[in-house]
Image 1 (cartoon, rainbow, N blue to C red):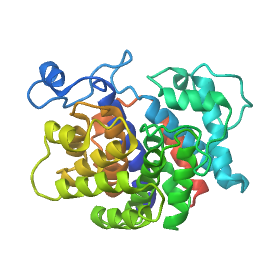
Image 2: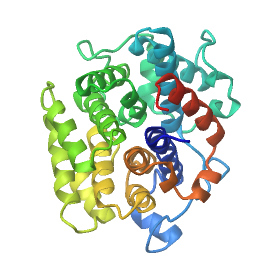
Image 3: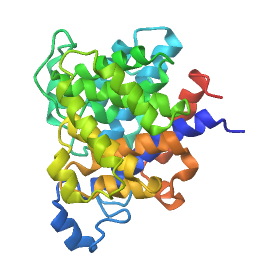
Length: 331
């Protein structure tokens, strides 16, 4: 029998991948174009992208490699930041980067070698061979490429501070601005708390309390608080409100804030994902992050079956998720 915790973790990553796939077809479109293509309600189902329906993007690719690194670290008792960094080197190889030692098995999945608009910051940072840290940042980027891949870190520990620190550290490998890596810390703690059964508002309060102890938190805190205010008004957020209040989601603090707002305002998981992708911005990343949150809260059963059936590399996700559930003892 599947345990509630394993269902929630599977839900978090699978719903994240579904949100990524929904948003991938409209990532670079403004809302007027989206409505022109799909009608007044905007996108309501998968649309063709990268030659198919349900195509994932670099967001899900890098999330998979994050999880693979953490699984290997737990098995070996090794440093998780090191293992994730090495895993990102394997992801870089799938994107045409240099040869790397073979480890894990994701590198052997042909479908992960497709290029799905990988972020320039991630590519440049990983190609440099320099190890970015919070104390010695590799750049000043606060793009959402760090937060989009951070959900698996929620599994690492029951300790809030430890999860936040690890997510920030893995984010800082490629993104040196506080809003780049602190958004990753907040996301990982939110997912951790939701997996533990916390209500979303309580999870936000816990993550917020950890965030304020970090240097450079002010920008992320401001947008997080605004997202909570907007999401608890009882008024459904429109794409125009999202853009005006929170931005396009191209940077870490915006992407996280949009995910929090749409998760708070969602009627259910499917509704939340559609809210999260239908705006003038980085639709695949905001959809992925909202999916990470609502999937952790509601479990895999809340994801519409036809979205799972058409999701690219769902079998790869399921295989890696099964390994993680065993290694981390989720039952």
